[in-house]
Image 1 (cartoon, rainbow, N blue to C red):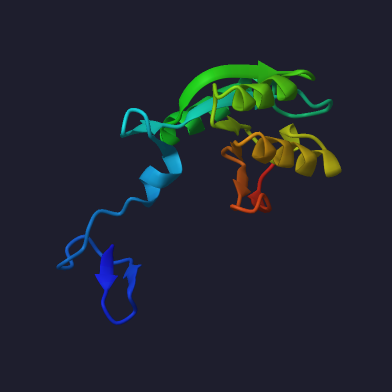
Image 2: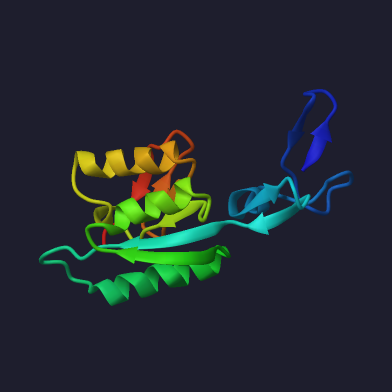
Length: 149
């Protein structure tokens, strides 16, 4: 990043360009600023999955996929929830300040139809986020890309 004098804003550039600073976009996405400690800390994630009748993948396989993705992204796991009550417990973890986001292996594990959007809205209302290997949600809570497992 460097400051553009004419445009009076920061612009992306290569690290070898004179006047450029580090690209902090990954830091902003995968960490949060702890005001009390005055330092960056890894975002805390709670894993959620549920079995779907007739699904190809087992609950264990889905949880392992979510754990692999979480490890690649650098999130700290603070809990795992599965099943029918698992979503309520995951959102409660966000509300209690235990977790910052819910990691799901795919969009279909959130539910079907309107339930998917209600669950994403519930996580946002609690002050958290929803992410995962098969989930791409923008800042407004809209699904930008999704894959099913």
